[in-house]
Length: 310
Image (cartoon, rainbow, N blue to C red; front, top):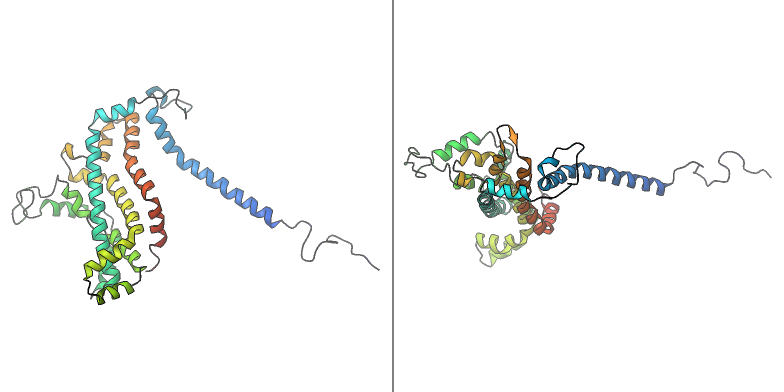
């Protein structure tokens, strides 16, 4: 009786002696994934860490070579200088007022328009929405000069006559910042996508009961959009808070400057005072960080549900 001999003798059918172990391969792939992820996270985190440490470093430690990732001593001098060199508290309030007002207006008008596009049947619905999508593709820098012209010559505002001449219109006023972005195209698109995920049966039942359209929107559908509203609120607040170019063009009064414009004060005569600038920048990101931490649960839900239906 012959016995099996040779290179694969005694092994189960279909397997060879050097076949890779699936469990070992999965472990190696998992380790490689986490190693690469950790390296990318470290690279992304280093600039922020350097900013934080720089805001606490003495001046002589900022550009020492090799780089001192941990300061030899900690100081709050840069934070004091940031608030005393310029009226940083006033700039902080101006930015907060503009960003918060923009959030309120975008949430209301964006959700109202999104509801109309998603749930109401009217002539030109699809055509108007396509125009809205096309407007999203136009860079803001393209419409900046026409926007300035409209604000400058708006009738009966800022000393202008009925024909828009004789005054400054809405230039150098907070309304010149608020009104152009009161209902952004992204807000309308984002809320429409969320309203499409909600059933229309509730709307039909409410109409049978005699509810008006605005009451249906306000009392029935809007409370269901908390995740989308939280997500849109974070995006809108971040955009308004970080806005720099448009406020710099519209606002000429130093008492109306925003926090982003205030950070520019630490760069002058081709030199930059990095300590106060880093301290001011860290203070500037606190509202966005607090807002995200407070609304992160709704933020994740809004990202998960928005855009499901087209």
